[in-house]
Image 1 (tube, rainbow, N blue to C red):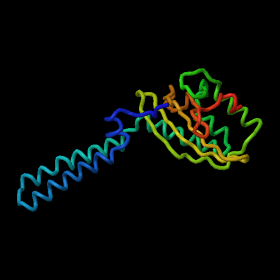
Image 2: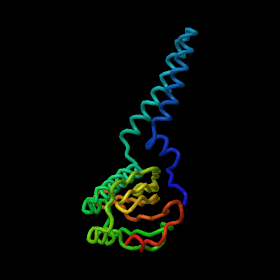
Image 3: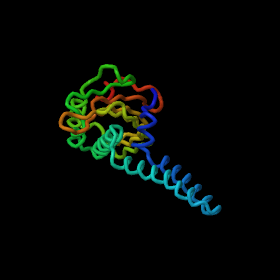
Image 4: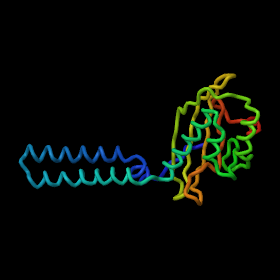
Length: 198
């Protein structure tokens, strides 16, 4: 499955403004340096243009929170709650109609809340550590973000390497919640049926 990705403009200006801003500041510095070295006052003032654009990019990138960034925050909070074995906290990040499935994000699945309730009730495994080893985000639409993570999970019976894709959407109350969770891989191989999670 391909990693989610945002449009170039969204990624460059809103989600990761630092590389573009640093590049513009380097250009501004180079223009200012050559202007000072050659005594060209007009060129020195021209160095303010890329520097000003860099500052605007940083300001906009700081103020604007994209759906991809909302999704990233939601998923991180969900993973922390799962690692803490706090099912009640984990449920706060899940929409009531959310489903979990495996391999194909569009395939039918089982209700995620039901799965969390069963895990809580039977307490089959205790998560000792849940370390995110890879995380990529994307803004899919103004009200939807996607996150793909690879996780190394240590439970009382061993270690599992898994990858997951989360679909996170803005709800009518303004909160951002997980609406679909897709189990992609287990130890680098395609994930088994979600029934194995029960």
